[in-house]
Image 1: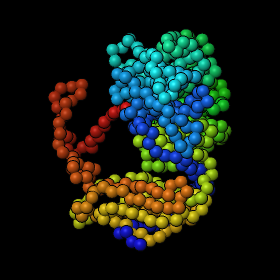
Image 2 (image 1 turned 90 degrees about the horizontal axis):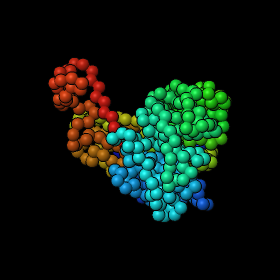
Image 3 (image 1 turned 90 degrees about the vertical axis):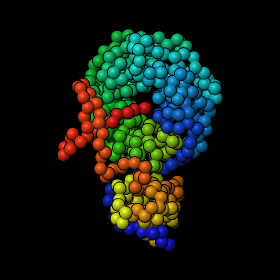
Image 4 (image 1 turned 60 degrees about the vertical axis):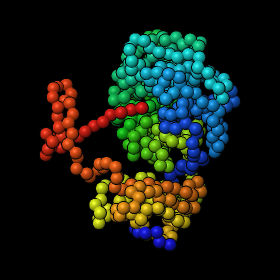
Length: 467
């Protein structure tokens, strides 16, 4: 059967022949809220729950006891916070602590998961705004709050209805914390890791400062090893046998942007923006042993045993780490964006179609709904642990400029897949178009600057934003 033009080039994937990619999908779908931001796993009153905040729709409390069938117990919308949004949670017993940046920390009774109840809100009136409670963590009777350039705060939560602020301690850009024994490890952004001795919580003191390979965003610990998500630089591993003298072991530079890490006794799961990656670790360091790109935007994850719960912006995906049974389809990219192509011309882009499973992958069909993206296809099989380079040719002829492509295969957990192709954007400029002239005020100076003033010079325009 022919569906226009596609050229397939067969390649042997040498690295893939050494091992399968070891991630199977147990379930995937919506959990009512969207723009998912984080995952926190908690055991309480016989329930295995995940606390999952969303940019829209508040925070959901989800029953994850059956990872193949997630069920929402209830939800919590943070009153007086933009869109009811909180960013990260921790919990002890029947009380959960949600960090809301400028909206403070919401202390919520979750005794009844169907109807969580606000019991207190922690604010700091020292500053008029930008209090920036980014992340909370809990150990024993203490709660730790990371506040970016406003440092970390330690609270006594013996009485959760009235948490008592014990001390504030300065940091440069605290993103997250984890406490083990008498030590608190702080992910301090571009300034690496700070290790605080907190045996007397009211008198914390820095006993070590560690440079990291990139921006320290998240931390987790197993045994004598500390793992740090370091953004565009991937994951760092340190030996903390002596917490006051951590020793760098290894860095693994992931393909995207590592924002969260979650560890068990042998592997590190990484939320890496464009995929989930799994690294095995030993005294020798880190090695990639699993990955899966579902096409979602992987914001955060948490792991229980070998089960990985991945917050992928619009939906939750649950993976099981272990040898894959049967064929296993993967794509090097799920979206291809073509540059502008003039009428009468064409342009080619490529992606890698992979079979990372131990048996043959059958491509049973490919459907596409725009003839501007040309595909030639005959029935194709991919032997175990091999891949094929796929060429896609875009020839604009006035048909839909954006389309999805459907792949139907014999993959046991992904028999149906979608890829997105986009061509000439009809509503405004796109990469490859001449830049229109514009004028902006000069920062820390006077007057204006026009783009045309810089004609002939390289110009970089950087925009910064965050949730």
